[in-house]
Each structure stands twice: as C-alpha cells, then as structure tokens.
Image (cartoon, rainbow, N blue to C red; front, side, top):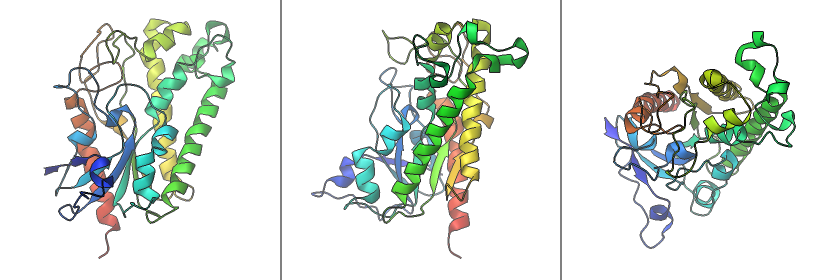
Length: 296
C-alpha cells in the first residue's frame, strides 16, 4: 500500500513549473472542511483524512484547502477559486474523482446559532420552554423545523456541487464524501485561548450536561443519514458516494477532558490515529468504486 501524495494547488497552477502527473495512476481533486486541514496546535500529533489515506498504488490529490481550525461551510469550500479553476477552468484536467469533506462544520456552525432573538425554525436546538415531552428522548431538544431547513441547505449545496462538476470536462466523475465520527461535547477548544464550539452551544440552550453527548450524536446521526440518503438518490446526485465513518469504532474522548483524549485531539478534530482508522477503509471504498467503473 502507498500513502496518498498531497499536492497544493500552487504546484499545479504555476505554469512556469507545471506538475507532472504521469507517475500517478489516479489523480484526485479535494476540497473540504477542517477534517482535510492541519490544525495549529500539536502539529506532531495532528493529521487529517487525506494524510492517512493509502491506496494499492501511488495516487495523488490536489488539496484546495488551507491549514486551520476554523469551521468552514460546505458552500465556501466548493466555491474556492483554486478548486473551481482546477475543476472547470482553463487549467482544469480530467480527475479520477473529487474528494469532498463537508457538512460537519456546517452542523457545528448551525449549532452555534444564538437562541436570543432567533426563532426555532432558524436554529437546530430548542431552549427549555420549547422542549418537547421527555418521552421523545433527545429529540425533545431539537427543532424539527430548524433541522428541515438545515437538510434543505445541505441538499441545495450538493445540487450546486453536482452542477459545477457537470459544467466542464469533469462531467460525471465520481464524488466521494464521508460522514463524521461521533464526538463528545467538551471544553476542549481547537485553538488555545478560545472556546470550544459544541459544548457552549448546548450550554447556551440549557440542555442538561448529562444529555450533551446523546444530543450531539442524535444530530450527527441525522447528518449521516442525510448524506447517505443523498448518495442513494442517484437520479438527483449521480455518481455521489458517501462512506459512513460512524460505523468505524473509535476511542471516545472523556467528557471531562480539556485536551487530547481517546482518538481525539480536541472537541471536534481527531488525532492522527483516529483519522487513520477512518481514512484506510474510506480509501478502500474509493478504490472499489473506481475498479467497478473501470472499462473491461
């Protein structure tokens, strides 16, 4: 097995020294959120999904992202100028597949919507006076109208991604996405001196700490189901493939921890061993799709 070679857009877009791809049997173009980036802390231990992927032969990926720990929206990444230039612009080439990491940070950002002055239909969480019956479990804390709006947003962004892919020479190439591992809400920020993202949102809505993890897993499970359902709708989203990372066992973080714990570096980012556990089976799944599509 050979590690995936990660290449920057500058190494491709620089016409003075164009990148030679002849050595790589498969070439991918990637855009994504923080699971495709390297954080600012503990660089010796941090990694990302791309760096931990291995294929049966040496493959390359041009990653249109930048290091950092800040959440970024799916629509922002898909409209990255370098990504668009390499996908549909004058310097575009035919890629073997698109690797997209998206939806997880969108969920985190939506969770952070303030309950003050924001109606339930515009947020994912409910405040205590709005909670449903206790018999609903953690569904009682979730705004169903807000979730419906979020799901519509995700589907619309995938619609745009399909249209963008099919607007040029990469018409119909496979798009590979993933779901997200179940995190533990805790006060472990990605950047020292700031606050975490999920735990404060749950606190601000008054959700009991004993229900934080289950509520977060409820929403993450909904996102996984949504992405998998989109991949199952091949008429609307042709050649979209989603790998379900929620099925891969990981060591959870301790709820009381404030730093590295289990397979996690902080509240929302995995340590290298966690990314490796997800990246290796995802790479095998990608190769299986490509092998099925290869001409006989």
